[in-house]
Structure formats: C-alpha cells, structure tokens
Length: 481
Image (cartoon, rainbow, N blue to C red; front, side, top):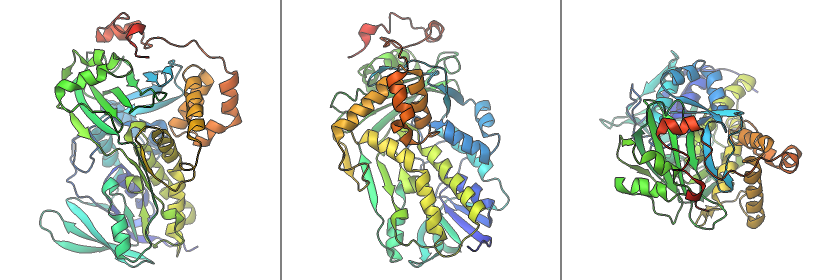
C-alpha cells in the first residue's frame, strides 16, 4: 500500500465528530480545512448547528478516555469549568422498568455538563494545531470528482453567497443529521447508499433550573425510565447536575405520548412519570430558561461499508453516518471512536492508494456498530416504533423472546453487583455488546447474589437534606406500579 502523506483534507462540519477528526487528520496530512456553516462562539453558547444541544448529554467514560488520549487535559479542564464526573451506578438514582437500581460502587463514569461547554472545551484544543484552518459561516454545496474519486468540495460563503472549490485529497462529511451526502453521491453517479431507520418518535423537552446550594456537587443525577413491561408509549425524565450550580432537566416520550408544550405543563409531566421524584425536586426550584423542544431522536445509519466500491477521497462519520436517540448518550463517544479509528488506521497503514477510503470506512463502521445496536434494539421494542431496516439483528427476530431477555438483564443488573458491572461496561462502550450474551454474564445472572428489591429511591439522608426533602415525601406508596 502507498503511504505517501496527503497534502490537504477538508472536514465538513465543526461538530464534536468534525473537530476530533480534524485533530486526528492534522497528525497525518499537511493541512486541514474545517468548513462550518455557523459562527463558532468563543464562549459556551448554543448554536443552530447542534439542534439537540439544549438537552441532557453524557460523555461516557469510553469517549472521555479516547478524547483524553487525543487531547490531554480535557477532563481536567471540563471539571475545572464545573462539569461533574458521575460514577456509575453509584452517583445515579435510577428507576428502571424493573425497579430501582442499587447504587453499587462505581465501575465506570460519565462526564455531564451543558453541550456548549463540552463542545467548546474540546474544540479549543482540537483545532489549535497550526496546520488546521477553520472556515466559519461557510457551507458545502457539492462534491467534486466522480464516482471513482472525490477531488474536493464546492463551498459557499453564507453571508455573501460567494462560491469556490476547495481541492482536497480527502473530504470528510461530519455535517450531522442534515447531511446531504446521499444527494451529493447521486450527483456523482455513485450507487445509492443503504440506510436503516429505527424511529420510536422520541421527543424532548428541556429546562434549566437553579439547583439548591450543594445539589450539583453533593447530589446524584436522577433518571426515571419508562416501564418497558407495559405496552404503551414511553415517558422518561432526567435531572443532571451541570456547571453554574444548575440542574438540567430533560423530559421525553416516545410516539403516542404527549410532551409538555408549555412551562406550566413541565412539572406535571414529571409528576406523572413512573415515580414523581423529579417533580418533587423541580417544584420549588427556580427555572432559568423557557422549555426547549426537539423531535430529532430517530436512529439512522448509512452503510457505505456495504458498497462493492466507494469513492476514494471520501469518508463519512458522526451523525452523518450513524445518528442515535440521544437518550443513551452514545453520540459523542461514537464521534470519539470515529476519530480514534482514523488516527489509528492512518498511523498503521499510512495514506493508501485505490480502495483505501473504503477500507477505512469499514473500520469506522465497525467502531460505531456497538452503540448502534444498543440503541436500536432498545428503541425497536417501543410501541409505535417505525422501522425500515435490513440489519438482520433488527428484522426477523423473536420480539417476545428478546423482550424477556432484556427484562432479565435489567432485573439482574439492578440487584446484582457483578451483573451491574458488566452491563455498565457495555452501556459505557467499554465492553462489546456481545458481552451480554457471554458465559461470564449468563453465569453472573444465575449465580451472583442479588440484593433485596428496593421499594423507594435510594437517596442517602444527607442527599435529601441538601434538597430539602425527606423520606416521607418520596415514600414507597408514591411509586406507580
């Protein structure tokens, strides 16, 4: 394989995926140009190009570790800016469809903060290399080249409409859910890409609240899930501690349930979840923002790796390739996995000749496969979920058997320390999804000692003191069974 160094790469989109990919590429090519339609703020502010940015986000430990390896000091900077490091499951009060999760000692972690803070902290480091140029307020119009090789991209200045062609040895599409890749490829005469969609109709409503003093440093995150044993639309709620002494509260539902549309409906929706503890927390908290909504929660995946041939000089990553229901927190970690794959493959193989882009795209597809199957096999079981898929793992399977096994996994993980550890490793992307079918896990489900079933949210007395609640307020009879 030819290993000459590429001269110029263009990354479309300064998303988490795009900025991390640009950083990885800068180690292997002469120059990198990042093309971004938005103006990138120098402070942690929301922007149009991140439509789900106002809702709850987790950076799971797998993604956090990969980013730390690429950009040393990122975790320290985030924590210094007020992000919270939550140990899982110790620092989380969770009601699952099978009951309350015991707060076993942490085996993995996640970083929680507002999405603008996460993006800004990573972007400042990732785009700092001297051979990276950022073209803001600029959008991609079309690819240049043909169905055998992409040679560049036509871009347009948003403010004045001026167009120019950027020649490139490599173009990476990281433009996200709004990607026009399929249209661009069609214009080049390339075959249509296969696409799978699993759409549970997830919608989100989010509001920021001022947390009581100490409730972002000495209080757990709270997660109320739907009861997946009941065949009706799901309703969910989370409260995450974020920077600035604030709580980020996100309420969500699947197709067929009614999301709160006004500020007056926000807390009542939380009150009617499977347990009203989130409503208890928010009822006297000071709201800081209006309610923000989003309905872009479908899981969608393209399969360039299935093509018999693929244009050299083109890669697709991030949400452009695989978009997830954000409730599982896998998007940013998948972005890190894409960038890490690019870095490792270019370091190992160098800059290849014909067919190298397809080989690298296959490696990227493998890197996002676990989060894809974790999200879709969960969402596909919600009532009213719309599925258009060719992945054999999502079609032609015994739904009832899958549901029973998923229920058994949850029932074991909330009461068994060993089962909880394995499930946490899988959900945080530190172990493959296949581990849930391993002999090790099956033995843990059968043999590991299970603690008694919890009948109330497992808060510590000092945690309740911080938020001015008591055990009577969240008594077992308040639970909806």
